[in-house]
Amino acid sequence: MENNKLNIKEYLDADERKSLLRLLTAGSVDDGKSTLIGRLLFDSKKLYEDQLQALERDSKRLGNAGAGEIDYALLLDGLKAEREEGITIDVAYRYFSTNQRKFIIADTPGHEQYTRNMITGGSTANLAIILVDARTGVITQTRRHTFLVSLLGIKHIVLAVNKMDLVDYSEEVFNKIKNEYLHLTAQLGIEDVTCFPLSAKVGDNVVEKSEKTLWFEGTSLLQYLETVPIDRDRNMNDFRFPVQYVLRPNLDFRGFSGKVASGIIRKGDTVMALPSKKTSRVKSIVTYEGELDYAFCPQCVTITLEDEIDISRGEMLVKPDNLPFIGRNIQTKLVWMDEEPMNRNKQFFLKIGTNTTRATINAVDYRIDINTMDQLEGKDFCLNEIGQVQITTAKTLFFDDYKQNRATGAFILIDPITNNTCAVGMIEKPINEEELLSEDLPTLDLKKLGIEPEHYEAIELAAKELSRQGIEIIIKK
Image 1 (tube, rainbow, N blue to C red):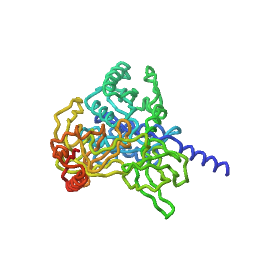
Image 2 (cartoon, rainbow, N blue to C red; image 1 turned 90 degrees about the vertical axis):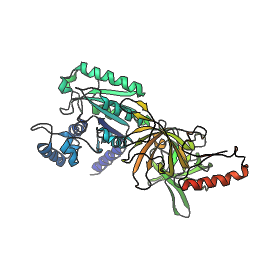
Image 3 (cartoon, helix red, strand yellow; image 1 turned 90 degrees about the horizontal axis):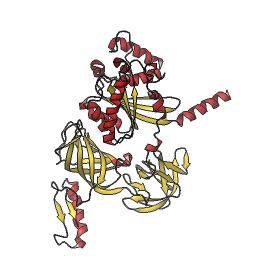
Image 4 (cartoon, rainbow, N blue to C red; image 1 turned 45 degrees about the vertical axis):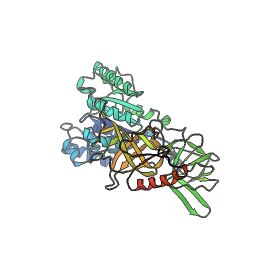
């Protein structure tokens, strides 16, 4: 009995130490995204008996795979409309694990009108599986999804050339699609691309290598997913700790709780609080299980400091020799997600990490035609449109370039009236006030107006008060 307990504990400990891979599937309608994930779950023996029974029953009643065949897509397409139309509408998440790794799979829609759903599913993904139909190859939708994946900063891409059984497992067809796709990803600067010939319906090269593609020298898809290295994807260089909560359980303890967004922190390290720029040393790193000597992303911890510093929610702890960008004006890529078109006269709430502030969209530099990658004339965005904009916030932000640090380079815009998430943004760089396109904002140049420096503070306070009332003014000194 003791041995059994030890074995169970060892198994649970080993399971807890497994790495987690978050991935999404994307592709055109009917390319087989849901079928691929369903086959992955089925062939890796990760379905319970009741799920298998329900799948067999639903396949007879609702399936599109043919008489007597199991429709693996029904494992993912749970909405009534999805089953009736045979398409994916909303993002469906599935969790499973193997002996090597844990997985969270996001099955995202293929329709252009559901672009925002794909952005949602891909916001936390490490890897993207882009499916193409072997009969049609790389199409406009493939280019769209690949561009979106590159925009989201996903570093690993799998090109799954599906339905190879319908082209007699032709090596020539596969190589033609592969070469065309690699040319596309090279243009977008995506370096890690792996291509697989698959048949999700039959199961070729999904979990086990297929004898029908002996010319293919790679592994099966599952074997690749179990071994693709993702540890280096995390930013371990730039320590960023957005404060979520000030923990004060008693008079003798005051700590700052949150999630390490990036980097590593150790006991005794010198840290700086933003925006005050006060410095102190880390006294302890506390978790529910006890104190740690060091912590790294994405751990949730409470940090205590040797000195009493006024820090509240939304502020950030960093290292003094490695600061993020600090400012109120940003240039960013923006994906519009609201049914209501963009209104640049409206103020939004901008939420980045634990920091929330009011924000206005000053200018639209350009929109992107995601089918051709062309830059179009800048005008207010409609649903699912993407482009580059300039934003000014009422409060100072602490942020990084999204490509360098996804955790501190992404934000959402919230409509203050409806509470809808209007847009998601990926920050590119800060903008100096001199560079800011201020065609929509009045500018007050204090030097040119001959205002004495002792009056600057009063004018800035007045400008902040106007900002709270929705009136933005740029102050130049």
